[in-house]
Image (cartoon, rainbow, N blue to C red; front, side, top):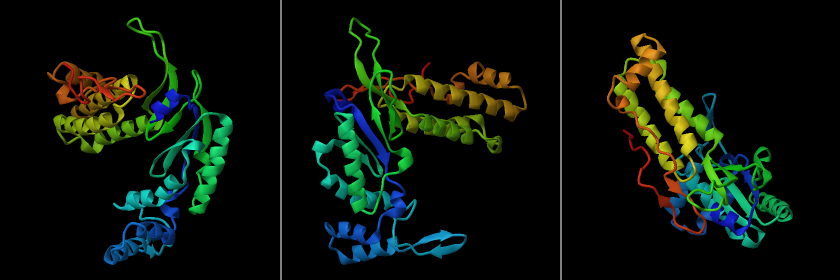
Length: 297
C-alpha cells in the first residue's frame, strides 16, 4: 500500500507510534470494544481475569487498571481490537492510514495536510486514552536525495533506478532492512556463535544460523535488499570463521581457511540471495526464482 500511495503522489508521511500502547490501554474501554462483537459471558470473564492478572515487579504482584499483559499471547489481538476504533473513525480524506498494532504511518498529499492529520490523529488517540510517542513522531517528505522513514523493520526511501535494459531511470519508493533490523540480525548471529557454545560442533552452529537467516530473509525479501542481505551473509561467515578459530585455538585466518576451502559447502552455511521480490506499484509481487535461503554453489 505504501508503494501504491507514493506512486499516486502521496509523498508526505506522518510517522509515529503510540506511546506505551500495551501498558496504557484502559481496561474498561477495551472490554467495551470486545463486547461489541463478543457476548459469551464465560469468554468475557476469562478476558477480564487475564487483564487483571497484574505484573510482577521486585518479586511482588502489582494490580493494573490499564494495559494488556506484556508478552501475553493475546496482547496483540487485544491491541488491534481496541485500535480498530481508530481505524473506523479515520477518514481517508484525511490521508491514507497504514497501521500494524501500535505502529502506524499516514500518507498525505501535502505538508499542510500532514500537519492537519497529525493534529487529528492526536485528538483521536486522546479519546482512546492514548497519545503518539513524541520521540518517534515526525513528518517526512519523500523526495530524491531526501530522508526516508522506518516502518515495520523496513527503511523506505525515494531512489532513482539505474535505467538498465534500455529503460529510462524512474523515481520509486525503495525499501530495505532498517539499521535497527540490521543490528538485531548481527546481535542474534553473535549470540548464536558466542564463546559459551564452543563445545558444539560447527555444523550444529551452522544449522542454528541457517534457521535464523532463512526466517530473517523470508521477511525482508519483500524489497530492495540485495546490498544488506550481502552484508548479513558476510557477517555470518565472519562469525562462523571466528567460532572455528576459537574452538580450535587457532588464528582467525585458520578459521576462514576451514570455512572457505576445507569444507565442501562452508559447513552447510547458506548465502542469502539479493532482491528476491521486486515491488512495483499497482502490481502483484514478483518473486524471482532464487528463494530466500537457497545455497549458492
